[in-house]
Length: 412
Image (cartoon, rainbow, N blue to C red; front, top):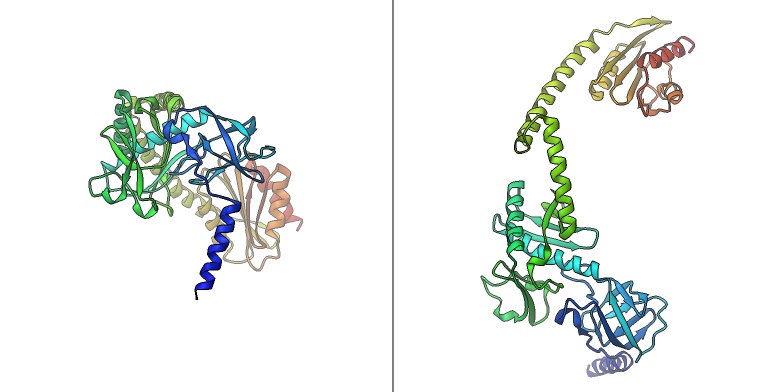
């Protein structure tokens, strides 16, 4: 029973001789503001290069990996926890070589702002509701929190105001390693089931927030400049809410843009900016009432249509502006239910929508007939032999379509 374990030990020993695990000094932890560094190549594995020390953050805690170059070659990937490897296609490096690493500083600094801002935002939201963090995703292109819990716009606004108050005054950001045995209630936010190490890295932002985190952060929250929530939508089934946010110059630019658009919208609604939501709700209720009235009118107008006789068939036709398309299709089916009937109805809004139906006893291919008419105006449709519908890219005179169908029916 002992020989297999001895064999495995021997294999592990030989593997270690070939690829000894050497810890890479994490310069990004000791000096997150380091933009350039020199290092020695300790091992090369194809396109992957291991360094004795690095300022490149490999990613983690929801934060995207760093970008930059090694000796002028793009770093396209970074992996590892203790021994950190850098993917550098076409590098030509060998063990023992001295290299110069240069970070894409704008990218790194933006992510530092985002990560510190994310801590403050989640903490401020958590004060207002019971909430569980599902996912963090921080990249150059998008900064997102996905959470579970009850949230509304008033809570989001209050949280963003609190975060920006902290940013204005400033708050020192500190990092320390704490024994997991000392992580009790009332301590930092931490999910110990996701951490295997005995010592846990804790990031604190003044007295405002304290959480376990492996990410790279600012020295002071004041450096964020500004934080703005730019999107707040449902995230189901992953979570209840997706909160997208911006930081720094992007947040300022978006805030100006949103402010101007809000003023323009209020002007168009004929309301003061602070009353624009109420004015919009009033307009929305008016629109609902108008749609209900139009639907009632549509039912009456459709029911009052009288057919003309085309050969041995009854032909119902009519055009309507702004009617609900579903209602028009339902009425077309009702019109041909009695047999020996054809119905051609046009619904006009920003486009022209045509419905063509016939009774089951009428030998007519509605799809072919409808497309022969619509194709002349750049449109098309689909359906079944006795029922078809489709539209045109823009508006077409309804009488033109109906006359064309009538003529085809007479010749068919």
